[in-house]
Image (cartoon, rainbow, N blue to C red):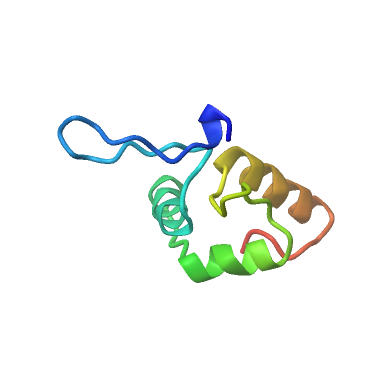
Length: 82
């Protein structure tokens, strides 16, 4: 497993540091909701994953790869996005 795909390390204060290259589905949904301004649920992400959205070998989501997949799906009228 490469470092960018490793689970996020813990801070000394006990708070998790999120790794945008390897987020669990729940964390990815929370991050996308915060930065996008619209609710993104775990179910929405799992639907996209079932439709072919990329995941890392360990099931985590790389936000850059996921965003690229969404753009591709939107450009061909696919199911990704909304």
